[in-house]
Length: 332
Image 1 (cartoon, rainbow, N blue to C red):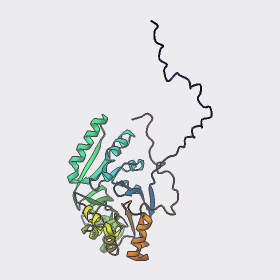
Image 2: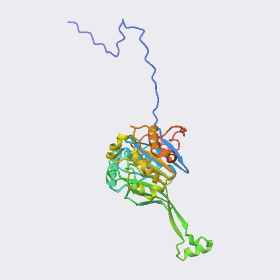
Image 3: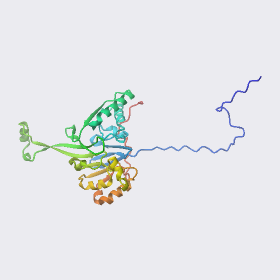
Image 4: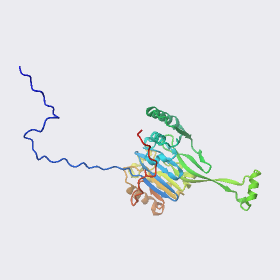
């Protein structure tokens, strides 16, 4: 009996003899890139760089002060700040902390210093230890647990003060403080040698002056944080205002966020030169959010109010990655 014919592999078989020859050509592949838009605003001598959309990501940097607030997904520019301040434990504010520390180590930068609410220290440390085990990389880091109204002295002339916020769990605002030594008024007429001699003899000829530069509130509802002297007097206040629609008041109350009507009542009491609003929900566009707030507070108050994710009439400042370190040769 004859053997059956060997099966023909479909990958080797040619087209059927009666196959049409005028089939349409496959369309050309269209390629494009999605680039996250990062805001860059200049307020006097300071810049605020960042991104903040409710429930997605918050990361805000003041590069001149070497500080970053929160790190939702750790964009590359955030790595250049030696100090990271975490306001609370929600994922859109802390998910990038492991990447921030690991990448700094990978790129040969010094270990990051992370300020955080004291109640978060142990779980964050456990999380980072787990990442070290997974990566098999001894990523170094320093966690600094903080309570309300504590000052972390970065340098003799610069510190970071914490203020309690109201967001359900442990949460803190941070204020960047310029620390200055000023000559006491009663000694203003003294000569240099006289002042030196007085100081040598133990006379306190100077007093300490603390000037709040930037206050970052993170997520919070209305409360005592908006009465704290460092918060209301900072040159730049970065605050959330998440909800703007009239029927979103219950959402704001449940999530312990600010509703625009609360913010409108608070704004006249704030003495800040610049007020920067972030964390706006995607349920409301930035243009509409601005119109709603303007209607509540008037044009004069709105002159000092800015929205972090407002790109209307903004200039292209270039790639925010350009000023940051390049990774070393080789892969992770």
